[in-house]
Length: 118
Image (cartoon, rainbow, N blue to C red; front, top):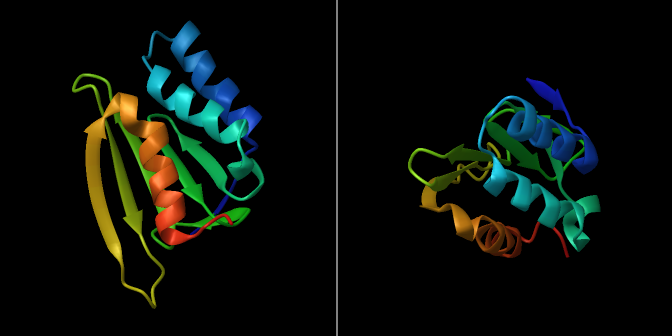
């Protein structure tokens, strides 16, 4: 399934609205989105939102379960889970959960590991 992406500004506005007007706690996702929006990555990675899940990929159109990073925030646990499914030829996938305050540094490590943005 092909998924059209949104700008990082649209994604930021989406989570900010949920946080401020719908009493959903998305501060950690907002911080990650702001880091991406204000970094060298903003033109090299693309995102899409599905409520509590942020999808990030390398191309302006994402493909479900194909070189796609799924970022899920679990506020009741204070953690973020990254799930990655590589492309069909690599058959590379993993999942990792960590403290919510490490989202930006873990994202940068992920980007560098897979060399998504040079």
